[in-house]
Amino acid sequence: MISVTVKLFAQFRNDRFKIEQRDYVEPATTRQILEELKISADELGVLMINNRHAELDQRLTEGDSVGIFPLVGGG
Image (tube, rainbow, N blue to C red):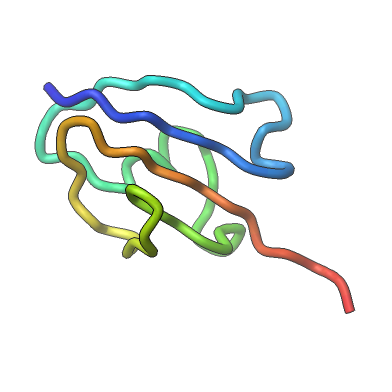
C-alpha cells in the first residue's frame, strides 16, 4: 500500500476536493486516480507528479504528489 497526495485544480474541484491523501495498492498509476475520480483523458490538460509533467500511465510511488489540471478553454 502506498500513500499519495492528490491535488485537483479549477473545475475538477467541483463536488470533489482540493487536496486529499489517498491510499493505493501497488502497482498504482495516474490513470487509476483519474478513473476513480471519473475524469476522462479528454478532460485532462496537465498531469504532474512531484511538480514535473507526468504520463497518463505513470506508476506512483510512496509519498508522490499528483496534480491534475483540466484543459483550459478560451480564445
